[in-house]
Length: 170
Image (cartoon, rainbow, N blue to C red):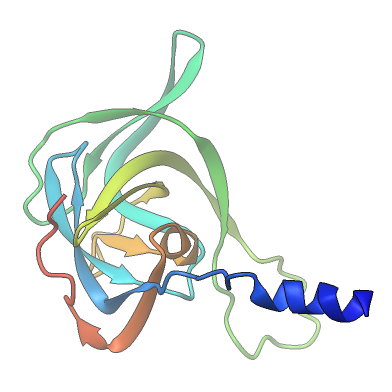
């Protein structure tokens, strides 16, 4: 009888509600308040980290902390140099060619990229995410939002949709 009452008590507890993720399209516009710009971004569930198109990237020390300076590498960017505290240096593996030949002893190459923590706004959602800095000027989208940032944004991506959230409102 005790087991029955215990089970009945568990069943009467309210179910924990899990919030539904916000649905975004494959492409969205993000506002980067610290940089004073809005940029088109690709929501990429296949990438782990977020990447921002930057050039003239230089790390330096200030008051015992590591910092990074950079300029945006986007179409309408001016020559403003931004400085930001460095969160860490990430090691990014480059994609290897498929169909490697047997006996190929070449190790996959990797690049080291500075990572900063930056506030981003999409729709009416604002979060601080990690963003690595690299020159993406040869890509269509200067901002790539990877899976780690998508989780922080509590986002789901519908690849059939574009610009679902409209202009950033935060």
